[in-house]
Length: 276
Ligand code: SAM
Image (cartoon, rainbow, N blue to C red; front, side):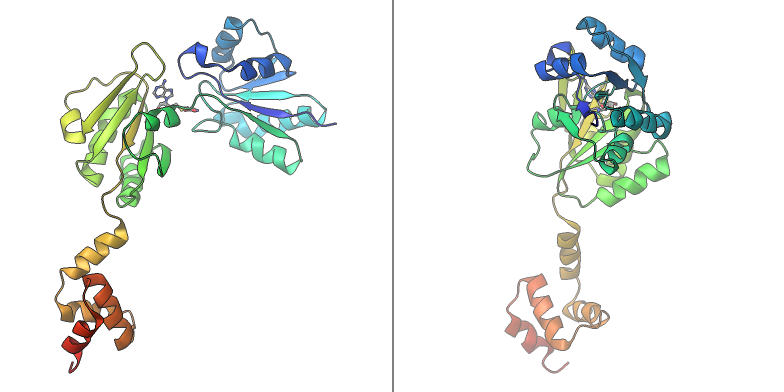
């Protein structure tokens, strides 16, 4: 019989956040696949757990996931952990999970800490809909391109960033998204945990760039569609008409669309264009 693959979340700072179930699973499995074995050993030593470890990190994900799958097919139970938080969330995990699914191996999530979730729930921004970005590229051009894609996203944006890149990233966000409200969730669950809230321009020169952090950005006020309609409404009626004509709309469709965009009565638009 195949073994089971447990995806085990570990604390993001405060060791008391480990769950009873996570400890039970870590004690019962045959192997623990860990991103950084030295890091995981500290956690295991703290809880008096001794297990054979398999090093599983981004650069060796492909080869090591094959080894893990072999062991699972051999009936061994394996727990996958990352350095902190939930494996697979800006951390290795995807590769072995895909392979396990192909081989019909049972995958069991063991929930726990995740920086993104704990950051957004205390941000004060909408939690109804959000977009998890993870780390932006370190390359400026790619960072800017990604932010441009997000410019009209009305959902709360969640970005992971390293302390030494935070200032540069905040400058890029200011440049592309404008002076939005942000929340920097720093050192979550640790002694110096803090939530720094305000407009980017107010914070950029007034914060210390240290500690692990998550950047939360309030969603755009208006979506791309609403922005387009606002832009179209600034045109003259003739220009607005030609805009849809160039998109091969029929006269009837154009009148209907203009009335909708400009919140006018269809008949009013129709009368205007009657003889045009
Ligand atoms: N898998 C992890 C999770 O579930 O949140 C994320 C791992 S990712 C490699 C590391 C990034 O997560 C950090 O650069 C930071 O943006 C964020 N992070 C992790 N721990 C944090 C903490 N205690 N406080 C604030 N941000 C944290």
